Length: 86
Image 1 (cartoon, one colour):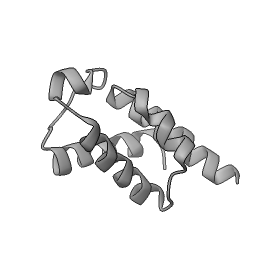
Image 2 (spheres, rainbow, N blue to C red):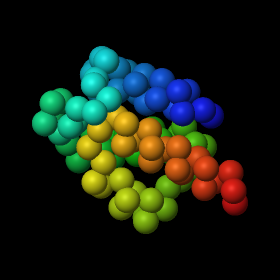
Image 3 (spheres, rainbow, N blue to C red):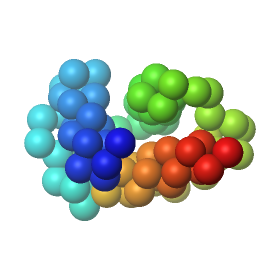
């Protein structure tokens, strides 16, 4: 998956699952859209489905400081890259 494809999928997840259409890529999701820890858990599950594999505890822990769509995309790109190299 390319970065653009990952961004498109993430934006689609936000529209479908969280009813957040066209969020700013650098908006703080917690402040701008009241994205909370329950939403974050749901998003991690969607990322697992996207990647076709479960995330490790360490990978989930690394996601806790993510605040923006761009950071989510960076996170998924890194996860996808690490799975391809294994």
